[in-house]
Amino acid sequence: MIQDIKETVAESLLEIIKSADDNINMTKQEIADMLEYPPDINMGDLAFPCFKLSKQLRKAPNIIAEMIKSKLDTENSKIKNCATAGGYVNFTLDDKFYADNIASDVFAQKDKYGSSNIGEGKTAVIDYSSPNMSRPLSVGHLRTTNIGNSIKKIEQFCGYKTVAINYIGDWGTPFGKVITAYKLWCNNMSEVEEKGVYKLLELYVKFGVEAKKDDSLNNMARESFAKLEQGDEEATKLWKKFTEISITELKRIYNIMGIEFDSYDGESFFEDKMDAVVEELKEKNLLKLDQGAQIVDLSEYNMPPCLILKTDGATLYPTRDIASAIYRHKTYNFDKNIYITDFRQTLHFSQWIKVTELMGYEWAKNCIYIPYGIMNFGGQVMATREGNTQLLDDLLKLAVEKVESIMEEKNPGDSNLSSEEKKEIAKKVGVGAVMFGDLSNSRIKDVNFTWEEALNFNGNSGPYVQYTYARICGVIEKANTADIYNKDIVITNMLERELIKLLAQFPEKVLIAEREYEPSVICRYLLDICAVFNRFYHDYSILKAESEEIKNSRLALCEAVRYAIGNGLWLIGLEKTNKV
Ligand code: ARG
Image (cartoon, rainbow, N blue to C red; front, side):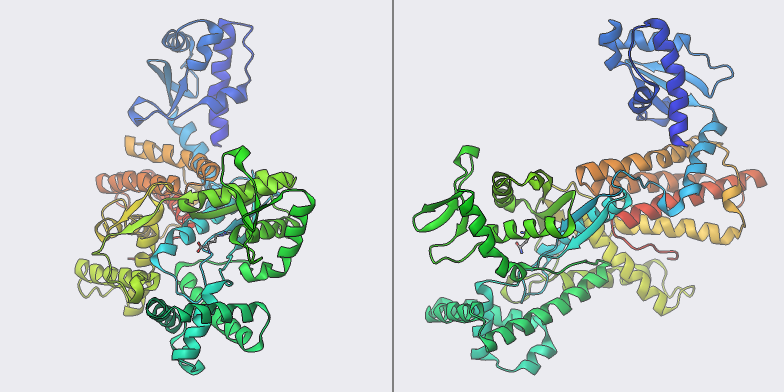
């Protein structure tokens, strides 16, 4: 096990450190946790930074490093070599000891390799995607949907029970607008049923255009929504139908992306739970009248007031989020309550989470807001449809088409694959390209999406990772070897060594991605391991290796790398491709 390797090194280190100063108060575990990986594999397999010890031993880090090097016995040890670099000591491990320990970890856990149990017995609620209804998903919804899905998987991999919530925006004045537009310019439910949410979008856009010319339309929309709030039968029926139609289309797109939710309890679900919140805020003396509106004053916390009730008594977005957080805690008893939206809602989340804290809910500290940067789809990426909406569906379709033509270009008329198989692969790779193009960027940064990058099959893209995965599957299939796991991995060159090191790092990368809510950590890892694997594949023969032993070893190494890449792909929500 990786842990065994680190502990073995730590044991030797502890002995030396103690011999230098008997009063040093450190455990083997602490030292094991301090071990790092040198930036360059030629420097060694593990590195020990001496900076922390410097204070306790009252010696410069590089002197401590030299002292460790001089005292370390590399005869009969699992450590074969030891070198210093400034304040670091770098260790090169015994080949067999290194490879055996890592391989046994990977093969014992296979598609669970990299997972952990830090979340065991705990629940993480994750609110993502959460679009407003009566409109199809736009490219603007890509990041919340994608990042949320990956964070859900990362939490699951770390042992958390997850509840994925799509807090759909299914309430509010936009519904008054759609109902009004429908009654004025359509009034034909079979047409809406046939064209689905795209008809609703058309009506909504038309409303916007017409209302600019004729303000009375806005009054009609307000009235329609007021009717809906009062439970008017016709308005309710239309609203229900429109929401149903919107959700059907949503699920179609989520299905293409392999995304699922456990709950669609959206804004309307909390309508009857708002009065209680307002009452509670009153009782707790938190509400203040401000120019006719009810607010919670947050000036003490350097924030503008949180609006609870409008002058006309209507509830607001923050009120609903407070009600839904209370509900989520009651219903799921969460240990983490995560929200994912673009950074422009930072103030909104800081405000209402502060309000729940002031209400005395100790779980307020477990409400976690995860912002992300804006994704820019430069003008040339796609034409816009009516009302300036770039639809996510169009983006995904275009991606699949582009991959189909790249595949045709690479292997014209390729006969190994049926046209069905080709279509299936193009779908996985096209959708994967878009998802990876998003997730590979640091979450908080603005992203500039370009087809050149997303579809660059030779590097830094989803297709590159999926193709590498398929390439490994191809080698293993061709070898047709039984018992691949029971073969020893023997390190015969630096690239193999580097692959072992990357395999060893995977569980730690997952933990970092979990701690920082940062799927890009997994993406970068995948790009790194794929790059090294492809160099290895290019430079060395696998099936025609020098000996049977080396062939078997390389196959086992391929299989181990396949698990790491496969698990990484799963964590970012990309499909695996066995063939290309
Ligand atoms: N519907 C909102 C929007 O489109 C996002 C909701 C995010 N979740 C939440 N609980 N506020 O901007």
